[in-house]
Image (cartoon, rainbow, N blue to C red; front, top):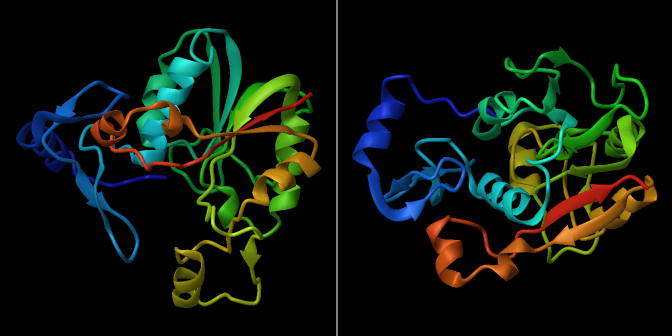
Length: 240
């Protein structure tokens, strides 16, 4: 996910919005408010002026920092469609062998189709693939490829936009009109809305899955301070 702000506008926004009401945990900077963001109906006060992180990025950062050894242990890390909020920070971690991939992202080092990856099997200790699978027609094939290239004992996070009130994922590949997709799937380039059966889909491809509600471990004040989405689930997967 690439969010574009001009080199002039972003530093000005960081300066004029600075404060202590809200905190971006990724860089620790405080702001009196965040920026709006969204397709169609915009969500108010969700986009950090400094890291350009959204709710899901800040939630994942907090979880990885406080609940895992992700940042501590040396690892070979594969990152799909690298998010700006993470990209430069991960590159600076000397004990990471950091590889980024995507078909279209200008900051990805390996141009590749997620359904046909150019990596050897059992190659990566960790894989981040966040808000990618909802764009992929054959998401089963994509998940199988993620499983193939992950090392046994490896860990990944495969976040997706998810309707937790929906038991069954809704998709219809005959729908190709961007406006209709935006109406039904939430964004013009999405091809489905995932339900809670997403976790079973990951398991059917071989992964062990932990559906983590990290916001349940935080106070209401912390959720608001970091501008998180209460109840958002982090799909953490492991290859046995």
